[in-house]
Image (tube, rainbow, N blue to C red):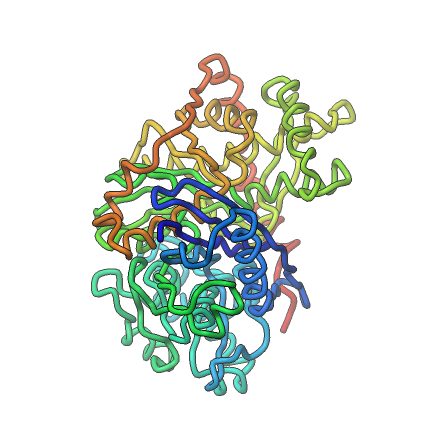
Length: 506
């Protein structure tokens, strides 16, 4: 047996990736599913859709890769984080999953911060103000506003925990996913039961935790039939999407960084230092048990390009020609987009500004601006936001990586990579199949669990850069000026965002 199978279970759909033991991609398949928005600030997904998509894509990659099920040595999941699945005593979901996009729990976030000294004191301790999108407020929202659901819940899990249970019949909360709950102790690698008591949460509702490379179990007979694999195939803990992206990027050494250009975007830095998150950044458990991941996340990154495809080009990313077309138009436009600035805050922001009331917009738009300039402004606006994150990491922690490994679907577009390199002044290194980096990272975690590699850190030499994009020094003057203007937008419009996007009264 010499193949590994991994899944990237994201917001828009699930991807199965079949790899060799070295992480080389053999076959891939994708199945979409919807996100529902039943009320303002609410966002739901059906956990059954995740499992259905995992089954469909597994059967597809086995067929397209011409791979016999018995050659699959193990599997693991890379999953979206900050979501809530309530399981009853039969371990069936009680209603839909509350998505990471869901911001309903703003009042509960404010209550938690008041209990801990107020938003400013909380941010000084934790690194950022709590928002209605965070998990602790979501648990409290359920207890206060859906007490019947809270009472019926035998186990709180997320996408990872739900899929691990469907695959193995065992309940587990994987370490990296647990670390975003606000209830996980990064030193002991266990739940912080004192915090749970402080906020009135029942510790018995949270399953035992497990590291990324732990063998959770083998595929049950039912799961094996659903996936088209052999019963007993080992299933490993996997990790959250940010952490598998780090593994798939190969940037696993101390202070090394990766840049993910996915639906959301983030800069992640691996470190053994016990740094505390600040200014919207978070310190989370990495897939390496001996390291943390300092992460600065932008809520919408490639999602901004998807919005442009839909609203400016009247198509979507189902059209394989749309992004090359947008890239070509952007490459033909002058740097700076004719003085047009785009703020990429389509759904609030987490870092560099933790404010869920922020929204996107074009600044300095005139009748003379073209669609191509608007599109270039979108590419550049995301780059300005990422530069801000990188500067904060340097200012607050003295992390200044000379190069960043670029992964995610957005890393396939050379014009965007060049813009980001020019705006940030950093060299970008891409990897082979950057849009599959999360799944490849999960597959390599399974390889560690199988003993193919002795540790997560040993994977660093396995993943090598395939191309390098260096900043053009001629671009610095234009972008420095526009970046300064970009930084001035939030303080100038903060009060207006607050008025326009205040949550509706209960």
